[in-house]
Figure 1 (tube, rainbow over the protein chains, first blue to last red):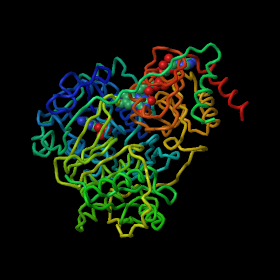
Figure 2: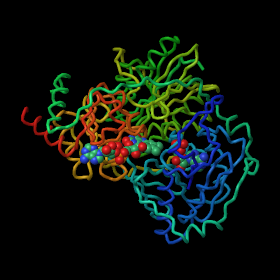
Figure 3: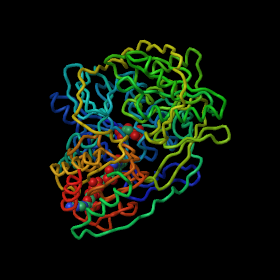
Figure 4: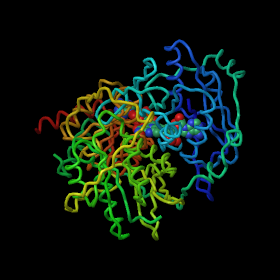
Length: 255
Length: 327
Ligand SMILES: Cc1cc2nc3c(=O)[nH]c(=O)nc-3n(C[C@H](O)[C@H](O)[C@H](O)COP(=O)(O)OP(=O)(O)OC[C@H]3O[C@@H](n4cnc5c(N)ncnc54)[C@H](O)[C@@H]3O)c2cc1C
Ligand SMILES: Nc1ncnc2c1ncn2[C@@H]1O[C@H](COP(=O)(O)O)[C@@H](O)[C@H]1O
């Protein structure tokens, strides 16, 4: 399961004035969007009656706080790729790093969130699948394992498609498809001693020029205040507010 | 990178391009005209001739036909077909892709195949001194960032629907060229076994003149019927905040906002929605906004042309009655 650790979304976000990248040097927490994938992974293992969930994460600053949280939910171990050279990574660079980390061992299924809370490119998991040479199903709302294949209900514009997908594969899940469990006290204590391996890009045999800010071949050139919209009239309902709405719609000749 | 030779991924829906593809073709046409270049469309499905006719009408000279991909997922198939065209000597400067379920898959697959980055969540494009810059709403749309590629092309841009207006140019049908799917091996092995459409009448959410959205303030799933009824009376589409999508009251396809749809209707009516920045970024470009919320401090009122401080359970039933009695 890919777990992204991000700056607290409740704290005001900021851009670095020189690089115009998101500032990520403070404490990082687990992206809530990834809770659903962790939960889904744990449920699939319960249903299969064996196996384990390994967390993979990439963060430039050695942060493990978010990973401990997912270990407390029940994941077996974690791999963190951390290297100062990874600052300023884009989605393709992230996919290259995570692909190298995932290829170190055997895997049946890679789960990720459909999109992250801070970057929300929504492309990283598919780039990862292409680099790993496996099929992918995005926007999953239900996943069941059927032998060497997955049955995935994939959300569509019209409703959903039932997709049959051989393993190994990459699947992305949206928020709300499962109910993430709260870590138990026992889980939190156990998480402290679960294996958490930290790797540098050299450990993965990757070249610093192809990942991180150096490998990201795009730049933000300008940031400006957007045009603000003004508030109009505010009325308190005294039992007749619907008439105001009717008059408004009549003015627009909609009714 | 310059922007003269532009390709537009033209996603089909029932034999015609999706509206977002027509929006992108229109924008590509004006960018290409300024750069003295041309526009090509890349599409798939069994209806190549009607797709090529529509693409031509919106300014494409060429329609690359990936063909009928049957029950395969479009992501790997279409990306591989495009990568093959490029390997055989075609050299688009820019590839524009709509931010749809399949569009994002195509973009991700293509990015990894070509080893080119992809810029996502684009809401504007402009030629700035011979280089194409994309615009992005950040921090809930309160700021606009501009970005560009620093590498060689093709530049991949994933563009949100409703970023541009679609206007036909009246061009003749695009010349059809073949874009066959090469052998995909494992990456192409997923198959659609069955398609399920949920019952939904009336206009589509991102095309409707009127959108009526409900949020957590409705209190329970059953009350969403008020939203559906009001939308129907106004010949509009029902929408939702993420809070009630995550709660399972309505499907994800109803969601308006950063991680859902961008809508720009003539009138947007927000009922029991607080106005989180991630919601507002998807609807604040609506021409007119009406908000009903019982908390007069709700942020949604800061962008509403008409704000009603009131209870949705009182205001909506009366509004529905009044509209019915006029019909
Ligand atoms: C990365 C990320 C992406 C997101 N993307 C989206 C997105 O695409 N779309 C989206 O909508 N959200 C999105 N969100 C979630 C967003 O931050 C808010 O949590 C969500 O929009 C809140 O939904 P709401 O307004 O329905 O609920 P709440 O914030 O709970 O607001 C409910 C409102 O109803 C009012 N109310 C209560 N009872 C009544 C009543 N009887 N009558 C009238 N009013 C009443 C309350 O005063 C309140 O203002 C995203 C969040 C993150 C972190
Ligand atoms: N640095 C990262 N480490 C681990 N997983 C990641 C990382 N970046 C992205 N992901 C995963 O990919 C998903 C989509 O990310 P994004 O492409 O940023 O929208 C995230 O929700 C995570 O599940």
